[in-house]
Amino acid sequence: MTNRERWLRALTFQTVDRVPLTPGGPRESTRRRWESEGFPKGAELREVLSEKLGIDLPAWQMDIGRIDRMIPQFEEEVLRHENGHYLVRDWMGAIVEISDEFDLTYLRTARDFVTRRWVKCPVETREDFLAMKERYNPNVPSRYEILNERFPALQGGDVAVFASINGPFWQLREWLGFEGLCYAMADDPDWVAEMCGFWKDYTLALLQNASQKVRIDHIMVNEDMAYKAHAMISPQMTRDFVLPCYRAWSAQFYAQGGTVFEVDSDGYIGTLLPLWLESGVNSNSPVEVAAHNDIVAYRAQYGKKMAFRGGIDKRKLAAGGSEMRAELLRVVPPLLREGGFVPSCDHGVPPDISWPNFLEYSKLLAQLCGWK
Image (cartoon, rainbow, N blue to C red):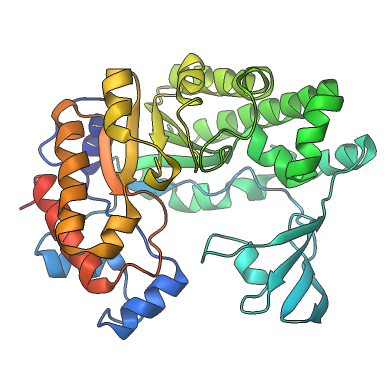
């Protein structure tokens, strides 16, 4: 069984010889702590775990690159530095305030747990949106540079081909800001529908272009759209603005031979899961326990309609010992009995999880997933 087969079969409720082992990944602050506790500085986590666990831990997926990002990006600029904060223009055109513990580069990717305060968003008017659209041409060749570089390895068939795209709520929030988008949904729904329609068609074109090079096995839609206890928008707004994109994307994806169409959303997803199921979504992550999600209850409710990745309470991993073991036994065996589950930490691994605790957790997870 290839690693690609293990990955896709595990997420489609089919039997596997070993469940993919993905304990989770640290951010920079977590790595700094781990390196003070014996983790080799600069080492790859997969290589270290392979050595410590006595297994050959493979890569499960290969990413085609973020083909959906704007081209050209805005010029990054520090506008002001005072009172322990930077006021900056980021690559997306927003003016934000961040702690001077970080710098502009931390706003490019999720390198660490960085908070920011939005001061001005790049789209405030229809004219701003028309100008923004010019940065999203799906046929710019440079979008596919990483895909082209990785093409020989992607064709090999031993890893699942993975694509990450922004969902409509996520993308419009980047343009208008959270408050601006919510006001627009209530006050100017036709404009919001227009922007969502543009994002739908743009993303369809991206995925069509990419699929002419290689078959995409697994799509993850980035769509953080929930607070700790509630969704950020109503079910009707989700149906009106979000689901049309998902329906179109998933239909094209499955028609082209794709397997896993996943939505990644932090927060409480209890009211969102049935809506996502309506639109072709068949997998979800990271199922944060602190946000009142009960992955065991979700499995009982939805059965084999929805696969999950994540679901292991990071707070219990930080506690270690008996609390950690109880959490893994609560979650992993019940879900693996039916399949459709790749267990992992329920978000990025935070710095309150020590390296010894993470290693102990990884060893038990390896046993439960059939590696030991």
